[in-house]
Length: 267
Image (cartoon, rainbow, N blue to C red; front, side, top):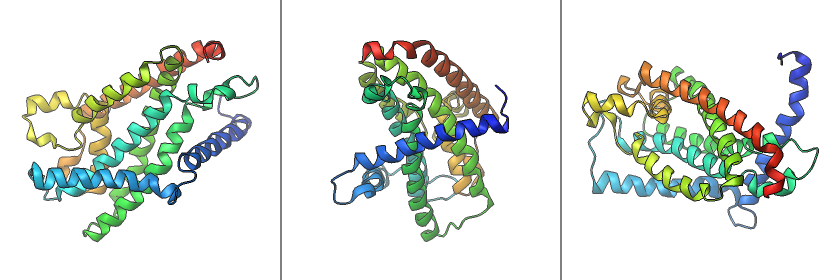
């Protein structure tokens, strides 16, 4: 299908519906609470405070070679992780939790795995706004490098969309997948340079760490928001990330389209 103006115009209502559903999902998550949508930022902010205390006063990890305070390095990495965790957890339940929509003949089921990614994106945007304020208060003013966030943000959305398509389809037939995902996310967290710096390891180990697709995104976010060439991801990690993303998107679309006709029978 070519991306003609008519084709793009036909996709607009679908995109608007996906965004609308994401907005409703975010609102419903905090309905009847005193602070409403503020909890979307307050909860990760509280967790950031805990990590900051543990790693600043407990484990006392060394300050990166760039001299950037560890707290700032930490919150940038955690902002990425919160987005990843939220989108994948929601994505794994995207079809199961919306079974009534799946059973509607005319409903575009394919947008459901995208909704958790968009919901996570809204929270991620709020988190980045909070981080921007913290950076300015610490003397790190916006510059042109911050524009790189647009590139890394789009890259992360593509990566998460592929995962969400795959997980949402498989979870319909294997309900244990959501529980397994929680364990895998814990392992993945510690394999990603969020609470530790890659320069703590020898170069021989660092090359293997770069095979983690999220390495590219986390280091890229730090490259954009924080000064210091040590944060710039290398070429290999970029190749690994985009190869993994392309593979995930292709596999996710194939699996989702192959199984979607059977969703209603298993819900």
